[in-house]
Image (tube, rainbow, N blue to C red; front, side, top):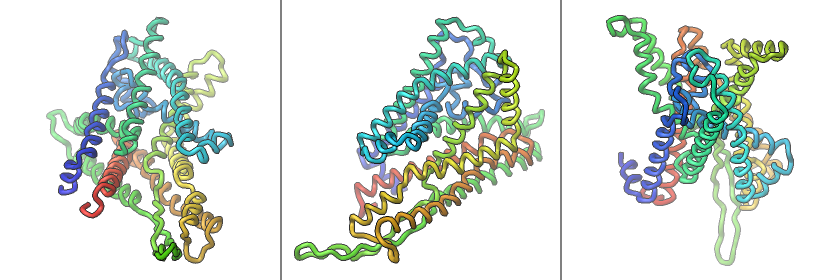
Length: 432
């Protein structure tokens, strides 16, 4: 409580927190602004039994179920981020621009991401609306005129770009990652209705909770507590690599001669691999659904085969697990460069005991990082597919999205707490 009061008394930090909260409230308002000229404003019945649209609705914070201007959420921006990060590996010039371009290079990459988000939003909006129009109960969007299509695509694109802008503004305030916080706000906003739905599922005709329902809900709560504890443990876990600094004489003063450590987190990537994996998983189903009624028989059969494959929970869970592990390594390689860290340590006169500065030190850090990242990646993957495992035992859909939601919420909360604490330490190290 004393730390919370101290944070609140810090004027500039309090101002940042209030601005972030205000921006998150704006995202929730946007999620309830319907697309102009469209009579259909409630798709909850369609989304309830569709895993693909359910995940889309998770990303949009309920914007898809309301058919709002932010029906796609930050999904297109995340997809653009994945594509650009992959291109930096494939195209050497982009890789050099990101690594050696400094602040200007990173700003250029971010600009490319924003530009790429626009066509991706148009494509995803068109594909999603076409898929929704084929669902029972979506007659309101089945026959849109050319002008209505123009207004709809323009509105959705504008809504997505506004969300992207809000996310970047939040990130600049250093109170957490903006995109993650937007998804977090959408999940938290849906918690009351999700809890009510879960309660109604396990009540009898008189409105009382059944004994089976009580046991099931308590089981869900127990699993949630264990998952939260595991996420906190893995997020906070780190491997400390000892670093020594040689003594240096400058004038009449001696510097260095201290021993410290370099902390390597078990999960360097945070919640980003989960977000990336879900975005990546949505594409095959989206494309397959789009071509499921194609006139070409081969294309229609291929689309139906893809749909059947992803509707199998076992195959879906295996691919989901593999993608989470792969994206954990992928994003860790982006945010942590052992060679760059090794060069910085060497320039400051430091070394790891028993190792030569430079290449040998970088190789050692690569080796350690790969080993500890494996533990973090496997844990994230297991937590991601845990809902599907639970679904196999309970035959209930209630926890399918809940597991991913818990993972995102807990990871985002931990990240926000760390960034706020870091800002407090910079302002008042001794008292804090």
